Structure formats: structure tokens, C-alpha cells
Amino acid sequence: MSKREVYVIGYGITKFGEHYELNPSSSATQALSKAIQDAKISKDLIQSLYFGSLVSNRNDQSYIGAEASRECNLNIPITKIDVGNASGAGAFHQAFIAIKSGLLDCIAVLGTEKLSDFVNSSTLEKILGGTIDYLWEFEQGATLTSLYAWMTQAHMKEFNTTMEQLASVPVKNHKNGVNNPIAQFRREISLKRFLDAKRISDPIGRFDPATNCDGSAAVVIASKEFVESHSEIEKKVKVVGSAQSSDKISLHHRETLSSLLATQIASKKAYEMAQISSKDISIAEVHDSYPIGEILAIEDLGFFQKGDGGKATIEGKTQLNSDISVNTSGGLKARGDPFGATGIAQIVEIIQQMRREADKRQVDDIKYGLTQNVMGTGASVLVHILSNMEDDK
Amino acid sequence: MEPPKIWRERRGKYLVLGILCQDCKKKSFPITQYCPHCSSENIAELKLAQTGKILHFTRVSQTAEELMFYAPYIIGLVELDDGIKVTGQITDTKLEDLTEGMKVRMVFRTLSKNGEEGLIGYGFKFVLI
Ligand SMILES: [Zn+2]
Image (tube, rainbow over all chains, first blue to last red; front, side, top):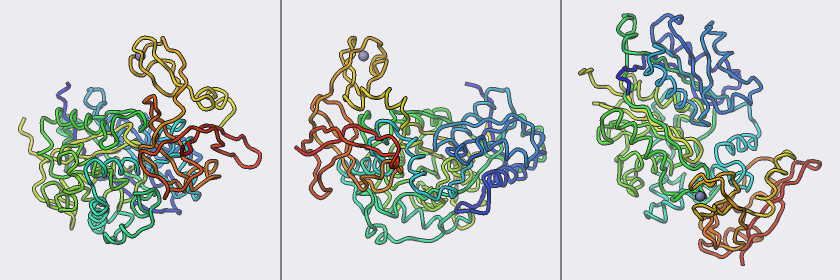
């Protein structure tokens, strides 16, 4: 593998939520221009823009990246990377590869989504239907939520995971989200409120899913050579692992519903690339679009034994400044989930933590941070590892 | 669904056919050109078992417009007697009356309606035996 080192040198993120006043390109431009400003470099040094978005094609204007680049006045290649609702991390992975390859030295990566334009919730359900097996799951009547309900049932049955353990995931994440200025929901929600809520797809309750919203996030990444030759760059965070894996898209084709094989494979590859193990991770941003999502993640990433995720969460082992602080940003649940932007927002949170810009949600003594972004029910998973360690090479 | 897609998928959706690989002898669903187990092209169509048992089920109350006609409905993961697993609605019953492991039988029903004038999508659902 190429020994070239890759750094994130700047980030930008918009407030997540409902922004009826913003058109999709304005939201994307906000994040992109903030990221370029934060990198302190001249925008002319950026050689390429990779962007990820699940539905930008449906906001009338296909290929939103072109519009965003107009406001930044860039004439560089603009490429949309499609990994469904994990397209943000997908775009980051491809940009990482492009720098590793040696062909490019400085790339902007953008994740963006404008979902408040879809006022009819049936439209969004249909869009999400495209992230599961559309023909043999969605058209048969299944939805993303109902499939996550089955995964929840499978974990409860196999490992005696309780409703209280499941609800402790969003309780923690909402608590973290209070201190995240860009989060859509900055308020705590009690365990009782989650447990008492009406079941929409049993055992999933009304308040359990993350909310689909508007938001954009961007980063600028560069090679070590580029960083060394531009003294204006003040802050850098090293990307030490980047991996993607896939699994059968339909749940009815999988061996088990109580783990995500793609998470296991992608994280193994990322740990190998970073030459570390799961024990070295201090903070992680994982795909908690449903409570079971985080429980599966912390097991499949190797933070806890298979089946222990629920117990670990309710015992506080994933809360802020515990052994492994999970979803310090508030996760998808409190931050909101603008699909394509989420994968980049997760990386932004790790960078803010490593640069000690996370204020009241700051975690101390971070060595490595990890992100996990899931497409649909796990047909594709991306894992990224960033390092806060001083260069020893 | 658009007419070309309905036409193309008719054998899977209406006749519930899968494939039996002539090389590795494994069954799979839906019909594919290549065996998903060994990638052989040497495959034969196979009629799936018409009965099975419920592995998972839950309620769906919000979905695409064309599927909202029967909502809320119950969606299930069913293991057919030949070992193939499929996703389908469990109909003519109530959520409270269902438990995992119950035996079901395949029935041919309306799945989707595109408004008053649009095409009607047909396919299989399940009823309790
Ligand atoms: Zn075969």
C-alpha cells in the first residue's frame, strides 16, 4: 500500500435542521466555503471536489456540486460519489484514495442534503426504499424502519437485550447533543419518554429513529507533502484508516440479523491499515439512525463483545469521557440525519474533538477516533480512523 | 411500477419462481441470471414452497404513496418450507394475533395502487394457516 500520508486540514459544517429559507446549493456552499477558510489555503490550490448526496438529484437540480462550486468560483473536477445514504463517507473514502494514489494533493469533500423540501413523508419513505432491496423488500411492503425493527427483535431474542438498554442509546446521544451547537435537537429526552412512546414498528417507538433534515458538511484533505509546503496551514489531523465493505442488500439473504457483516469487515480493514486495534479507539461516531444501530456498531467494531452492547450502554460505558465515548456529537439522533452530510459530519466531530474545539462535550486524551457510516440496513458500511498522535515517522 | 418492469418481473412476482443451480444444486430467490452461490449461468427456474413459518414481523404505517392503500399492515420475514427466506405482508390477521414461528401460506394479492387510474401491482402475501 502507498505510504503517502493524508491529513484533514480544514472543516466546515452548517447547522442541521429544517432550513426552508436555504436552497440546496446555498447550504452546500456554506459548508464548502467554511472548510476552505478553515484550511487557511487559497481556494485555487484545491484540485478536485468530491461530493456525496442521496437525494440531491431529486431536488430538481441534479448534480448539486456544480451549483455549489459556482458560488466558490472553482473550475475543478466535480464528482458525485454514490453510496446511498452513506455517500458522505463514500466521497471521503474516494478522496482519500485519490491522494494516496499520488495523483492529487488537495481535495475538498462535501456531503449535503436538503430534505425539508419533501413535505410529504411518503416521498422520503420511497427515497429510503432505494437504500434497501427496492424490488423484494420495499415493493413487498417493507420499509427501512420495519427492517430495523426485525434487527432489533433478533438482537433482543438472541442476547436478551432489553427495551431499557435500547432506549439508553438515544438518551445518551440527546444528552451529548445538548452541547453541540450544530445539532438539530439540543435537549435531553428521558428514558421514560422513549419507553412510553407509541410503537411505530414494534419494538421501534415513535421517538427512536433519527430525524431526516437539512445539512451540509465539508472537509479539505491534503497529502503530507502539500501540508509541509504550505506554512499557512495551522491545524491538521491525520487519516490513518479508510475502508468500505458491503453485504447482501436484503435481510432475507443474510445469515444473521444481529450483526452487520459489512461493519465487521470494514473495521478490520481500517484497523489493519492504521496498525491499531479497537482498544486504541478513544472516541467513535457511529450510525445510530435507530437505537439498535449503535448497539450493533459498538459490538461489530469490536468495542464490546457480541451481545454486550445494550448492557454496556445502559451501564454508561459509552458516555462522554468513559472508556470509549460514542457519539459525542449527539449522533444522527440528536444532530439530525441529512443522509449524504452525515458521513462527513461524523468526521467533523472527530476533528473538532482532536483539535480541542468541542467545548462542553470535549473528551480528554484522545488517541484515535473512528467513524462508521451505514448505507440502508448495512449493504455498505464505511469506517474511517483519524489519529491524534504525534508523527513518529 | 412502470409497465416494462412489471412485465420483466412477472415470473418472480406472479409465479413466485426462484432458481435451482444445476452446478452447485443450491436454491435461491429471486430469479437471477447467475447463481448467487457459485456464479454459474447453468440455472433452472424453481417454484418456491407455498408454505412456511414467520421469523419476524412488525407493523408498517408509513410508506410510499402507492403502498399506503392497505396501511397500516404487517410485514414479515418468512422462511418457506424449502429453506428460502422471503419478505412479504402477513394479511387477514391482526398484529396481536401473531407470534414468531406461526405457519403461513402464500396468497396472490394486490400490493400497490398508483391512484385511481394508475397500474395495480400484484404479488404474494401470506395468511395464517
Ligand atoms: Zn450455483
